[in-house]
Image (cartoon, rainbow, N blue to C red; front, side, top):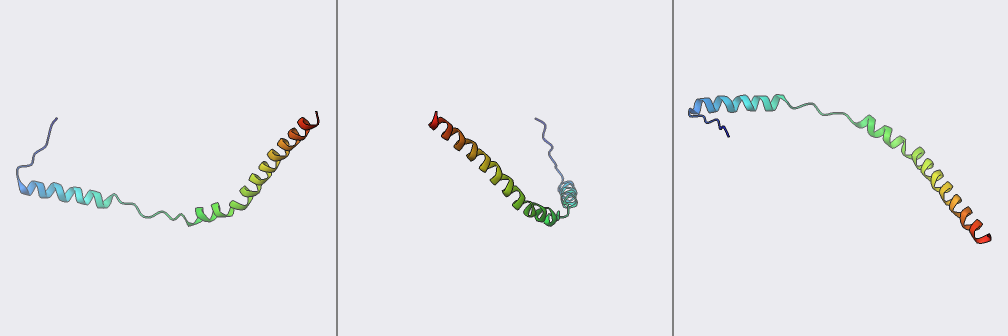
Length: 72
């Protein structure tokens, strides 16, 4: 395994300052997610209605099968 060893403190300072400059320049601005959160919250009611309808159909089919099985 190759290791880089710096023998001069001045070279260490230059490398450290270059790494610090690269690290601070690579940060991105914050992403605004407010519109996405609003859109998701607006879709909660329709998704809930679809889920309730699917559940109602499932329960209806199971009840029909139960009644049919009881009568035969």
